[in-house]
Amino acid sequence: MLENKNPQRTSISQLGEFGLIEHLTKHFEIVQESTLKGIGDDAAIIDFKDKKAVVTTDLLIEGIHFDLAYMPLKHLGYKAVVVNLSDICAMNAKPTQVTVSVAISNRFPLEALEEFYAGITLAAKEYKVDVIGGDTTSSQTGLLISVTALGQADESEIVYRNGAKANDLLVVSGDLGAAYMGLQVLEREKQVFLVNPNSQPDLDAYTYLIERQLKPEARTDVRTLLHALEIKPTSMIDVSDGLSSEILHLCKQSGVGCNLYEDKLPVDPQFIATCEEFNIDATTVAINGGEDYELLFTIGLDDFDKLKGNPNFTVIGHIVEEKEGAHLITRANSKIPLKARGWNALEE
Image (cartoon, rainbow, N blue to C red):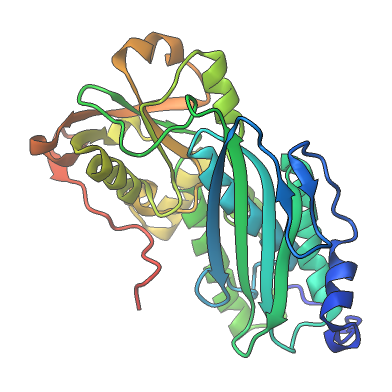
């Protein structure tokens, strides 16, 4: 929304594909011992020795996953890396490398790509992961981004979605719903801007929410925190598509049900105030919003005392037998079936 009206524009065609790759990747540094060869050959070489490799990939499409009207390219590069690292964290593994591929239309000059790669560089530095390759090509439909992340873990450390058992506790890191409300604020300001391009948004009251949307963080710290507490989760998933959807994934994979308690949901005061301003039910957003990139996991009852009172985690429910189903227990003690109303990438 605060667009520079006279930006410098260098045509990407001046560099060619290999010149472009060399230009954009020259600032990437190798920090992982497991990276034997990064960018510059036909393939990267990774050596995890006795560790297990963990791999995930994600596709981000302009107009579907992001809107460049309010998503700065540097933030987009950062977020594209982070959302993949979050999936590695959800396996209780350590992220180590990423590859980044982009398809770009001719409306993007070199300077725009430099901004995007500056965000990737910042994320790589922040999370101590190596950028080891990728691809660039042209697009007729805007910007497309594909990131693959690799990680490592001892086999005994890896946590899957299918290990939850009846009587396990349901736990989440951080707080919920803020990213969705950040998106609502940005969408509202976009509409104001379209009506009056001279308007300057005052977003001071929404800084936390907007940051959660534009610059989320992967919870790489959770693995370390749980290890220090001597807790290994029985199942784990990251909260990308909405809490309700993720809980139902865990329940389906584990063959269990659950009770989620409305009064236990961790939310930020700025989130509550903004929900009231928008006249949106806070609980509905907290369980369906998505893009929080917190970690949702289950632990055995025996581990409750180790985790009790820890400010990083909140016990939000417990696992029950599959026949009991998955429910939200409201503040009025009503029992409502839990539905997956979060993000659906294939919705039209």
